[in-house]
Length: 336
Image 1: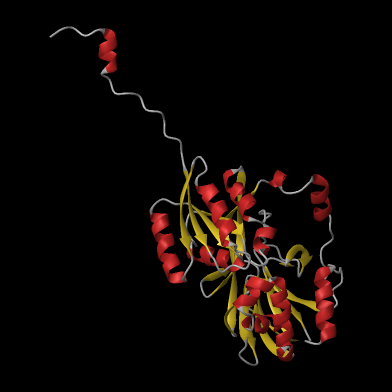
Image 2: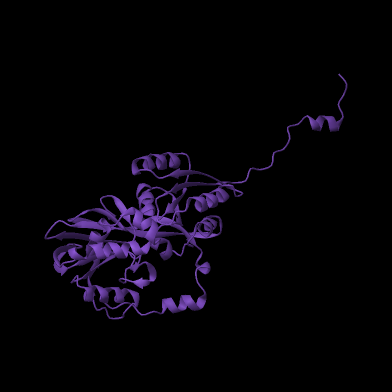
């Protein structure tokens, strides 16, 4: 056999392969029934995101909670650790509930009616910017939730006028009227806004109040972060219990002003207490809402699940200008 030249010998060796870059895997849950879901826009942004360099993923369109649980379990077993909820606050709470006690992170693409949780976490509103956040430098923030019947809610739970209003709310109204839908629902439910006797237990301490609206607050805000309903924070390990005594137009109007202008001394919203476990019962069985959805009836027990969910949020320096941050931090606490 003729001897091979060094060049020929080298050419017979296997070619060296370029290292394969790490690709981040995202499992995306899309709720097409969310209040601000526009199919052509959201699907365009998702397509751009999933074809970005270093990204791979799967999309699941939400149909029912049982199918979602099965798909999330499969995705976690397949190695997914970054999950994305495309929808409103209800969609986020559903995904977080089904991923509870898993070593994973949740991103939010806010296309709901109010997107209160996304606002509190400083996640950009709109599909493009919120998806871009997932690929930029970010941090992970653990937040508390209200646990009711093994389901997690991040904003508030209530019984009274708000729960009657939400039980009367129509899906078509939320889609086309946005926030006005809640206004019309409240107007339809005004006849039910009478004072009821509530029995409360806060960390084992019993009390009772006469109220037309009773709420347990985890986030301390309504519609926008600056509109404060209480001093509750989503990562302080406690929930605050407050109420509005009467369902009269004057009392409710003052309650709205308490929130809108962030009065130092509240006129209608009254503080009861704060704690980790709250039980609510009423002289009659009435609906209970949490994060904008009716979730049952009284009596109800609400527990604070401390730091239970980790969200993907912007880096602190990307949130606000220094002057704005200083102004917010120096704001005096609400006096209830």
